[in-house]
Image (cartoon, rainbow, N blue to C red):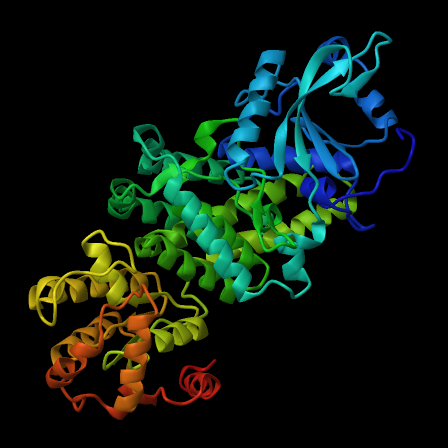
Length: 572
């Protein structure tokens, strides 16, 4: 098989888990791309490292040739040899020392394999199967888990179908909002259970982040002019550094336990939506712990940036909004523009390294040049106003009038985060969204003071979202003129449009909905039938708003008709 022409590949993962197309770069280019990718992971200048030829000959022997001869296809990266079988993949660590990793002894390579298995099982438990020995028999032939002495170790993986990879689904127009919602929920759960302690928290420090971005700018100082004007390049650098000059949002993220042991390389090409409905996320950074540690927003910003790079800003914003809801992390909007710009700049740097590498083919270098330009421009764009203009949409009305469904629909139309008074009320007292709270009408968790705190938190979070340049939807009753005026003032303070959508429905239908809620088990809203009359007495008529700021919505209409009305109102 060693003399057989190999299929070419755009990325290493494409070779690992599927077949590339005929126009892709040769394997030599893949090594260059992976070397450049490590520059991104390290976030600073590094030596490419030197493979000791004698070490390869004496320690590894004919391992590659033997396994290729047994039917495996080989993919080489600068840190691994990957052997592709029909259904399984085996990854062997190369005996290299690159400074930030050292695989030069058998013990270290075994430890690295164990770490890869353990860490990647967090998000791909049935893909990373085990660590198996590489053996050599009496005749000197290497095998995977064969007879004879163990001379190395390999991570055994299930081979994944490339057509189920997120970037391939996107390219084919098959990546749907449902995919995005499920992915956001999965990553939110992953981050919730991820390690968070004094060691991980160090990596949320502004000084650490600033060192990384300054090194990015130094590494591209001589080449950035090939992609941006001097003014544009200076603008990116000045904006990122200026953002870090206010360390309060970053310190708040650390204090809120949002700096964790994440994935470190969350890109579309590492996400697989499998045929059984499960999601596998592979290839986290395993060789150096500190490259995974960081703000969870830095993790998800990689994916939102990637979606934007592929031309799907709508899905990028939906992903952020859904993650914020699932993780109750709306404060991420205080730093997400920075992290998206940072991630885009780093990817531009990686592409520019390949574009200038004389070992690469002319086709690969030209493709990299175009990608670098697009990434650098995207890095600049993240400091500009988003494509979806900011606004405040307050969705109010009687209990069971359809506010939450309406808010969700508007949020989807605007790709905007939805702030819920029901969820916020429970979050403030450390309860789960569907856990009932004690207290009746206007007492306990629903007292005037408690309600004032809930609305105060809603406006605080909405202010953070608006400050990022994005729209926000607030789902609450807005039963008093004072509550509505506070939301209106928030919009005025940011200089953005305000609209109140009042959800209405016949009283009989509201009673039916409340009865169904009572018999349906856990629900985010604690409002029940016995509260309706009391609520009606305290709901102040909406007569203080201008016609352009007020929309009445009859939610007794069908779902499709209601959506059409909202699309007409919000430009969907």
